[in-house]
Image 1 (spheres, rainbow over the protein chains, first blue to last red):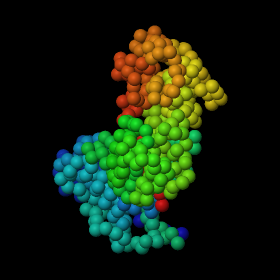
Image 2: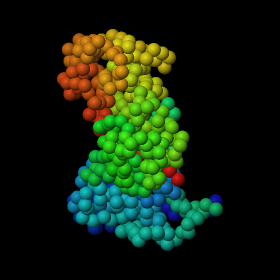
Image 3: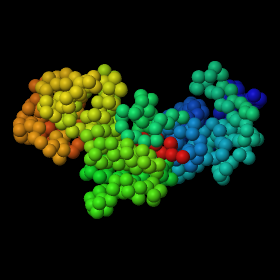
Length: 180
Length: 308
């Protein structure tokens, strides 16, 4: 199995703080902005962003997490993703600026279903997308991220493997892996 | 990915613990969906469901219908009154005519035990038993157990008394199967004429004294006296039944313990349960109805995953 390292703990921290600064620049101290992490893996990365922002502005921000399983259009063919995880958005998203956070942007289908899920919680002013890794050239629907940690060129037979400490790994390591 | 082992839900008997767990966990997710401003998900938009009711129903039918609508399924409703069943059409002909209209899941209620199994043997669609005679009513048992779990945290070792008309009750049988699987201690209580002869073979306690049953139990699931299924008299009068087996505040006060009261509905107020008990804070009767939608959404969603 061929592996190429994209991030280790050190450069992941640098990227997280750059993304947070970009968010702060656009979101006016998060007065009307909320962060929604996507289940299952986007929530860990979202929590890092939230921690860093809360540290910088010294106040709590509104946050939630969303599971997109029931909104997917490919769930018949994609059986491993069918275990619905918890969703928690205990506030209305009416008139809010929503930032969706996920680890990897690939075909765009998860984000499409996430947007469908989000509008069930109200009509946001604006929806933005923040991803750690953007796999360019693999999009199946016209969705692009607003904030990107790193763009990579991948082909379909490759996978992005995200191992974060929050998932029980010793160190943060994010790889591109060739599967066959 | 976890899936149900079977393409039908015909009874609790065929479910294993992993499947029960999967249904409860999925119901948790749908319960959250039902708190959203828009309580609908598009998961079953490619699925057509027929609700085929050969017997009267309010709660179960509405609950299934709402669950199906919340999942965005296409719905077909059939009830035998006013249909060609009255003209003499056979059961299988009726069902096959409904299915030829490309129905994926059939929710069926019938007064004869075994009808859902018979249908499942003869058609390609998934079949959900919504009550067959005095045999099984699996979705009711699942929502009952789910409601107990929600209230008490778990079911293992909890003492549950099922009270009333056991002999005619599919709810009782499905509840016994499910609660035993989940490790509960189960008692049935009622007049001897309303308790099947060999029911203690199911490893449950049989009691004829209501006070003793309530003193023993953590949860009392009170069943309806099913007058429509009683061809012969099983007890002298409703008044006498109510006097000996009816649950009222006076009786509960004499026991002096926290007891959860359940009832699958419809309630005969003043007969098996008094209004002050049915509407009291220890009653979770309306929670049962609320949870019914989430449980049925979970079952229909999980069955839809098995449809090719």
